[in-house]
Length: 225
Image (cartoon, rainbow, N blue to C red; front, side, top):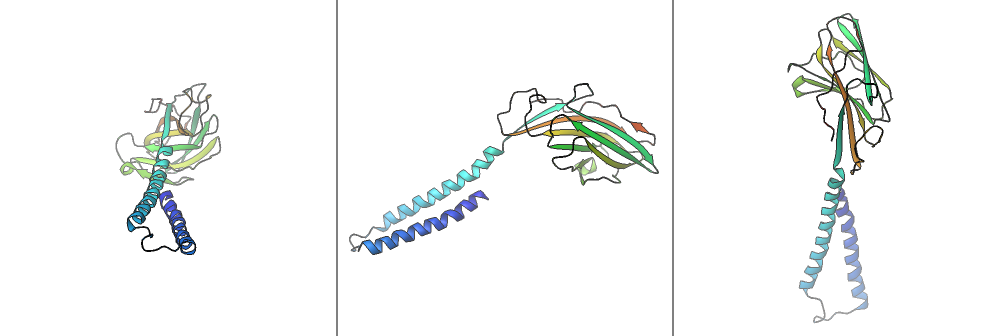
């Protein structure tokens, strides 16, 4: 897009410059047939201008790619007194469904919270009856991602209605795009596009009984880079 805009802006400037040169020559000079510049030099000048425009386009294309490189880091937490990110669940049975209330809270100012339901037995997940935000299915129905958007309240409370017999893994994350030494113990990132994901997960088995503050287990992502 930037390359196209640059080309469109450069073309009128080139044409105006060329027209000005022609008018100036007509007014100030009277070329004789022997003095008139040959076509060879005209073609050289035109080729140089075209080359300059192409170089500007290439630079504009490559520059966003270099800026787009990001540094992603991951921290997987279990329950602990000094957690960066924590969440709790409350489960209420209503007729043939479970009303699951999630409360997510994180230190600092996360740019986003992520919530996903993942099948633990390679089978398709049962449908979500209701959710306050849009969601999408992936991996042939074995994963459901809730689209919470950016700049959420902290803490964030989300209520999801699921069917009886629902089984899966509940994955939650707090996403940061600004480095904070009190949250990320690693070195200060070199890239401006810094992303830190602090994740937790828990088994979610809804068989018709009341559950609260289910036991958390560490996420499968346990590496910090």
